[in-house]
Length: 382
Image (cartoon, rainbow, N blue to C red):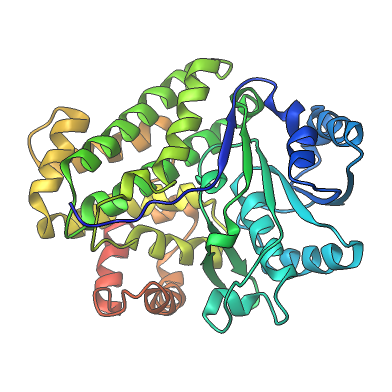
């Protein structure tokens, strides 16, 4: 087990009706005015916005709305949020939505305190020295952004999808009420399942040092996601399944499953970021296409771990059987496993490979994933 430092300052408030406490939580932190970020108008139609605004009003906390944040969040909306935050003099950002809203909120929080263009922070031209305090009410479980410091944003001009990560962008408090996620569509439920599995397997398969206890944690997360996804497909109102699914999403990327792990990378995310940057496919849908193809290409480099995956997750004998079983499960729940299902054709591959080369450099994987290797993996996903 490698040496490690584990630090996660985010307080999680988990359970039914916890969103009603947001005003009191902000007041505890001395917040007087927030930028309230969200995605669609659904939070107003379903009553969540009314609940939040009532809680804020009861504590004398003012807010400024910043809605319209989309899946695969865009840099242009981050720029607009920064301008609004500065003009209105807010002293915190409150994210009400899923991972895309929260990632945008983190970028806005960092960019508001940064003198240059916020994109500098994504491409290594600037550093995050501070950020507005960030708070969250989660309405979709997938990214783990509620309890980590990362944020991913797409620059729609350059077609680059990059990330920031700083101790300053951890949410102070995140509210996770599984009941708020019961209206998530079937498609986004299964895409979320693929996203959580992707977060779990990156280190599990690629690490040069992978402690047994961490492998067991990862396997537990994956099996929980699979079991609860199937339960939720049968009954979307199953609160207990929704709660375990949500907590598994948090655990997959809050640092717990990576403690003591060393020498790992994120190749599946590297490849998928190009898919969603160029073709605006849902992140989880892109991942469910990439994962089986990458696994088939990579398995010979870590055969024992692939055999372990097959045995512990599916009760099978060989790495190839485990990969086939995961791909079959993706197919069964209805998340795509082929580029053609994302309407990505052979004619799109040259532009995709060019974008991937840039991504490989950003992820520090250019030597391991030259264009020839990337082309081989994409061929396995066709």
